[in-house]
Length: 189
Ligand code: DGI
Ligand code: FE
Ligand code: FE
Ligand code: FE
View (tube, rainbow, N blue to C red):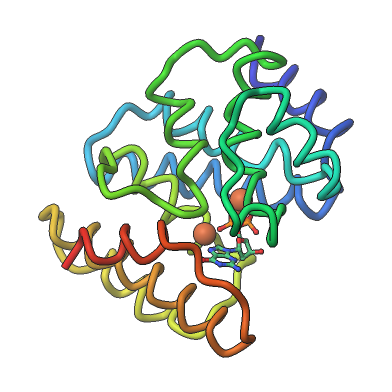
């Protein structure tokens, strides 16, 4: 499938606003991939498809997760929207024909991260947080982290800060914190 074909297919799955976000994440992921020396084409595809399941309702996400054999933990049960990442990876594989496990993993872990993130995983995770349409409290701090130098530490600091933002945000809203968000954050200390 070409990129154009994938974009046409995405139009049937996600809203216009979400498509705009996805295209911005793709561009940001490509930029970060060049900066941190990871495969640009893998970053492009992971960026483009990372939210392909974002248009599904909670019920549909739960149903697809069962169908795909994804383990539904208590937090997923409470916050099915979190499932758009692992379900998205399966849709990228089954409906967009992505076979590269490296791309699929970057999609799978783009929301909660993982304690074993590849540089590509981090690039996509961060691109999702810092794309120009996105607003968050520490966005300037995140962008600054990325500006520093190209050492691995920079990328790790930025991903850790993004996790800390997420934890603070959901804590303030009184929502469940997924333990994986905390594990990802701790793994980068
Ligand atoms: O899909 P996006 O909006 O582009 O961004 P994302 O994949 O990072 O997902 C953000 C969603 O995930 C948002 O609804 C908040 C939620 N989220 C991420 N980590 C946690 C969380 N929600 C809860 N309750 N707990 C978490 O630890
Ligand atoms: Fe997402
Ligand atoms: Fe995120
Ligand atoms: Fe996203």
